[in-house]
Image 1: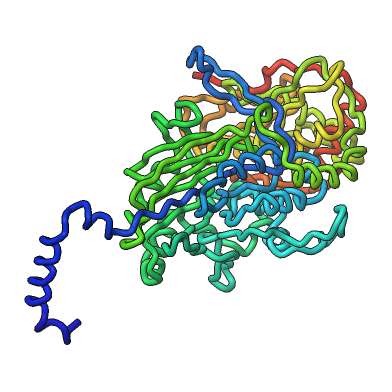
Image 2 (image 1 turned 180 degrees about the vertical axis):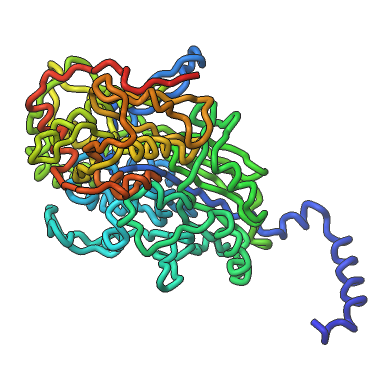
Length: 560
């Protein structure tokens, strides 16, 4: 450049004459056309190889004040839609924003989610950020999901060897404290029409409070926006200008599945903090569907359980290598309109042949559906039943001598609807309690019990109201201050006030007992006795108490 400096005036004059001699249309013809890129995205699949009950809830086109349920989801139909959306798009990539596995239905969970990894690999998934549920069984198991091999305890259970994911996990913000290195690569760069595009993958920084502490031991989860921004200079040094973030964190919109009026939640703050170099953000975690503009950037999310595939269309400038425009459309995976993909059908059938007889075992029956949806106080019908089942499994003296059972709402994953005549199977019970946490009975003082319940508001914007067993009752004040939301005289057991000095035997699942969901007080419990798995307790409860009727939701009271 320095050597050519003396020639610049001459070159400039020549350039001016050249431009003057070329018409505007002719000059435009000399510019290379934009490169079209289609990104297909999903999030929060949670091993739903088969369509989830209830499909997806959307606004009723005839009356937007009402909701309707559209049958949707399932790997067989999703694979067909992915193929259709890729057709006629030579530049395309299929990506995900985490929680592909974990909290899965029986068909996937029985095989430690190997079928889901195989299904998505078969579908052509290329990249995925890690979600909090990817760590449900710990780092070592997540590495097995990527690399393949038999489960260290249960061995090889599937119909064929498990080879691991054909797609790549990304984990920019998840760092091994001992080495300072990320568990998976922080980003991947792919070229489309000669233009490099970077995909940065990461999960929410609050993951340690949402996963069993042993599952994230030795790992740190760094700030989302700071992590992304620190990578920008490195990417630019590699010639990358087009940047897409796959993040397992999201927001709460007020509109329908293809819009986002009034969106709130962590994703808004995160996007506002991101370097301007970031062009598109593909989000998840909140199980909501939206296509948004936040701080001028396109932000998307595709509901949950495979009910939506998001199609994002980018135009890339081959000269600047940056994004010219970005648009998105959330497409419902309609089971009534899409054919089943034969390869997915064959994969599911191979696993179902092994799992089907176990899942079909009769558990009992219900008089009507048991819903996991909480009321205004945070209590749900199914949450009450689960807590009752855990108390029943541990109340005998030799099994723990429990007087109270508590369970976290995030551990109750699916309604129990019942089939013909209200019949309930083991598969339905497992879907409601898919984590296979062992029950732990411990001794807590009344004061410790109250202190633990106050931790339901560790995150005031997203309180986690514990589900409680029959006979125990507490009230909480919505206008109360941190640490004093539960009036001491409104905590009772069988009508008697909880004595702060008395010792109580309390049953929890192992996740809560280890301080999961921020309930650190439970780690101070003593005289621990480990019991059966939570799902086995619920299965036994149905065996002995059927038909199970929805109990009145009067154990938790909200004041103000």
